[in-house]
Image 1 (cartoon, helix red, strand yellow):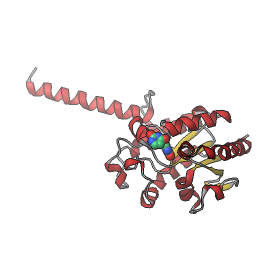
Image 2: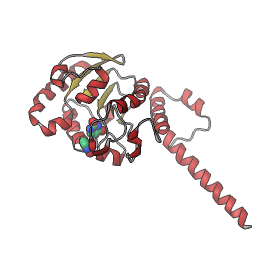
Image 3: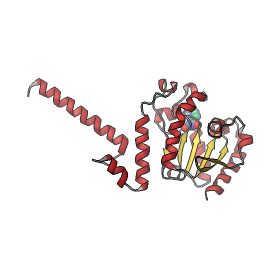
Image 4: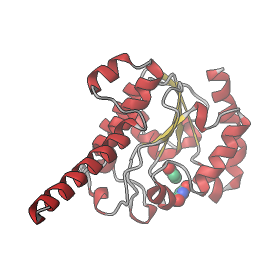
Length: 229
Ligand code: URA
Ligand code: URA
């Protein structure tokens, strides 16, 4: 074989490999030859999975705000997009940024324990954050970062169509309820956002700092359980 032919074949194989890696990100292990048809003919459950993957793919290189500079990867969320329960936190931390999944660090583990107590797990909820990239040193996301990321949350909500939303912490509450009020004042009430019923509780990271907040959080998640049952 001529050297130039070898180079051409090598480059073609590279293209094919890239194509299938892109395809896998977008569609998982199913191979679709006609994408639009695939979106139309899948069941509603498959469609939501597909649309979430497609959204993840479309924001992989997002540059809407400065957080793009220092993140390892965009963290879209975790869990089951077919659930009618959506949990919304603040922003990825160190572990989330590294693993690409929401709430996998210490706060996430505490949250999982709390949710287990009300019969919820990642298989029957979807979890995300108001900001999808880790702020440096885990500082709070800035208002312009929250604004830049909001359309992504809106797209997630449009796909998932949640009926019940649990808002974790003050940053998420300020973005979603447009108030600077404290969690102490916001908790215990039901809000209407995104056509869903929402309640507010403390962020699990706050519980790690102040275990005295656990009792109120327990009351809040029980209220949430009554709401979705
Ligand atoms: N804290 C958050 O608000 N979100 C995460 O994903 C992890 C920690
Ligand atoms: N950093 C993490 O890795 N996880 C958290 O829950 C909070 C900060």
